[in-house]
Length: 487
Image (cartoon, rainbow, N blue to C red; front, top):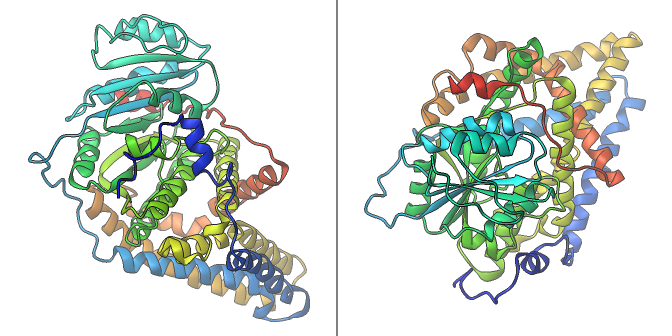
């Protein structure tokens, strides 16, 4: 069945309204509601023993948290066990899809030049690069004119090609946020593939070619993410957050690969993501009403495929790699995680009819229930830690010591998994120095008492924003890593 060509002529906004459960809510099956309610009930049932038991059972909520996390590690381990080096199988004999890059940028004058130059220097350069200038009020016009000779276009119009880089164009827009900027640009380009790249993301030289080849080889592929490596500034806090985030990103991308095996991958990083343009338009583009427009979009792509009986695929491409700016201070990190988790909660709520719904295959029966539990995972984690601190503070060491032994056992499990998975990750991506052995060991032991608590705190802040109906696409403070990589 043709999933895109037989659609009636509609604007992006009209298609979004038809495809989005936010704008056109779906009926929620009873099973979905019960599964969601069960997660909340489980929390309170596991919390009760802390008030009545005088042994390890008092920490039931922490044990449940550890067992859940370990089960997810086990699932990932099974799925990645045979993962090998990603190879760019030749697609020279296949039709070459055209590829356009959109850089949605608001006041990014200091980094745009580096990002554009990395795109222009690709082994398989994109056919088009569009700067979606989202109402910038900084020196963006002057920089684009100075570096590339671009002449400022009228608002809402695409500029002529840049004299110094013919594939570069400039689209000026009133400030409306990233999703609106991306959608507006979609109406001005006609390439087969659309690659979204954040202004603070530097693609490795073979990244565009790897993405183009993946889509050429697999007609069913409609969305794909590259593998990102976080980078922070040279400050002490920057080194701290880069250290832990590198450890976190390795684990997260291996998890994405694992869920991809069940055709249940939901998380595509908008900082470096590729889409088949017709599929993107078919589902209404990006939703400006969501804090995480990239994550929400993948749900709609899966929905559309199920509704129309199409074999659409979403993948993570191991040979397509990039480095992206990551938060380098406590407040910046908490704000990022607040937005990410708040957007995750929005998306989970709008798509709650998919939870436990066999109509969506493994996505409905496995991934969405896991995501339901993930909504409360940070609450479980912080509560478990608070209970441990309380037992220590009141001198109940006969309870606290067994808890600490359980935590040490969990740390050892994590250590074994991480040391093993580092080799898998290196073989998959070809990155040999992701995280040196010494720092990796230290990260595993220190994370439960530092970075993990900070991450969960940001997520709880996301809960507060979600329940209060607040939040917006914020501008992240740059850490100057782009200048370091520009070399």
